[in-house]
Image (tube, rainbow, N blue to C red; front, side, top):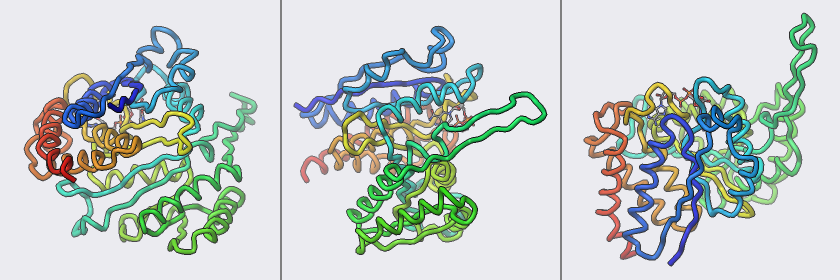
Length: 362
Ligand SMILES: NC(=O)c1ccc[n+]([C@@H]2O[C@H](COP(=O)([O-])OP(=O)(O)OC[C@H]3O[C@@H](n4cnc5c(N)ncnc54)[C@H](O)[C@@H]3O)[C@@H](O)[C@H]2O)c1
């Protein structure tokens, strides 16, 4: 029996609602397989915890998380707690403490998912974004001088270390090579004359180690336009923290909307746990009403399965999501359906059960 210890940080708003459905699907797979088992440990951290205890997570939180096989996170943020506190004191603290320097966001238009582009070939929208996740524009470096005075100045410093830049670019090349796909770098060397000139230089250097990988390089503004006008150009994509943050939301809109978009924060060396989460926020406007779409959280569960070495089950979960979308009967209101969060989770689990025998035979 393979036992996986999962730390669950359900967080705020719709976080607990959607995560419950991801867990439902993981448990369905474990039960059907019979040789794997998930143990969940729940941590009550988030904005409600902050309002009671004055901290987003316990002082020894990172220490307590470090031996888990993975972290499954819902969403954090709620009106009343400034967003920079909820982000920096929980999410970014975990990403940085566990050196989760790779953020993987699949942008794949699966069958049945809505797409705002007209006449698009589904297979043309199949990108894998690899976003730098530990430094860059989100390094948290800067200063606030002469606060409140007429000569007030704020500085937000982008931090691009050689180690940090090289490792994400090398990871992206390795991923592209393994998948037999091209790699596109997105930067902005014309305007950001230090950080992005350096990024482009490192990309060219590392490219020499991978002569078999076809490459392209775009300025971020051109890339935003091309993702809409010619999405098939993009296969594996590597970019900085800020550009990746923005472009993957654009990608989410192309590939079915925020209710379907998942992200994995990976420590490739596996020295620390990696973290899996839907990319949407806590959606306070619909929290507690059973309206939230759990498919992004379920997709994150699929990424978790991939990461722990059960890729065939990761694919099975994606196939089940696709099956649900093609049926078009059990969908939440954001996808023009009338089903509840739990009903969608139940239906995906049922489809997983019906597809399982063919996977077990393989
Ligand atoms: N990773 C995270 O934890 C994360 C990410 C983004 C925002 N946030 C936080 O979430 C809070 C709300 O932020 P926001 O409103 O900008 O973004 P949001 O993603 O929470 O919501 C944006 C819109 O999308 C809808 N939506 C989001 N997820 C949905 C789902 N699964 N099903 C159906 N509809 C969904 C919401 O109802 C809302 O109308 C803020 O406090 C923000 O800081 C957290």
